[in-house]
Image (cartoon, rainbow, N blue to C red; front, side, top):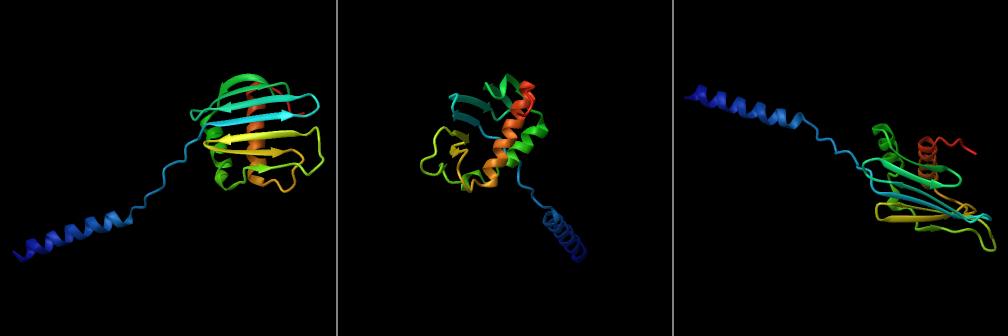
Length: 147
């Protein structure tokens, strides 16, 4: 009887220890709906980039071209990482007073929209990086070179 109890205790302990050695990795962050809208300037720009959570992308732009496509898994991952911390940004980064004829870039990621004037000072790297990633993806989809 003592040997049987000892064997059961050893089995139970080894099972507990095996459970303790596993680490639980957080699940992947999913891409949210993203909408990029660039307006203003002397020509009255109205450029759009829309991205769905499944990686579908639509571009309508005089500047970036027009096209639709599907991002690769790697592109989806890169863009998802580019938006990490988006919720921490302010809602607006305006131009200084008495500045006219500038562009405003508005990007909505999930529920959070951030509007930035191209004349704004102290625009966070997070916004600039996400914007550049989206514009680069748009050029890839439309085959337009950077101007």
